[in-house]
Amino acid sequence: MAIGDRIRALVKQRGMKFIHLADSVGISPSHLSDIVNNKTGPSVKVLERIADTLNTSTDYLIKGTLEDDVIIKNLPTELQMTAKRFRDDAEFQIMMHKLGGLPADEITKIISALKTFEEIFGSREKDM
Image (cartoon, rainbow, N blue to C red; front, side):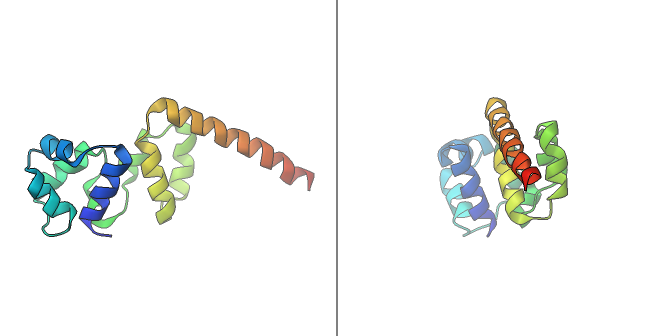
């Protein structure tokens, strides 16, 4: 996956419009289109602005990996240890990245559901 593909996925995830991203970053929509379609690479400054606007890291946009301090520190305490344990798993990184972009009330609901899941299946394992 290239930089443009990651930007496209994050814009979609965030429910943004490309025109709003271009506006926030201070570039023309056609320049952003060239970046998103992998026709050209962004300058370092533009890449930094895109990362800031999309609440991610330049490392993620370039390499597809997440820096712990960008994602994990924004997660609720209950998820931080789990995120650190699985940080080398690419699918888990993507999931944590998506989770880190959600509003706090939605994250709380997900944590509650995970705890319920753990209680149900944890008790079943003990019965076996």
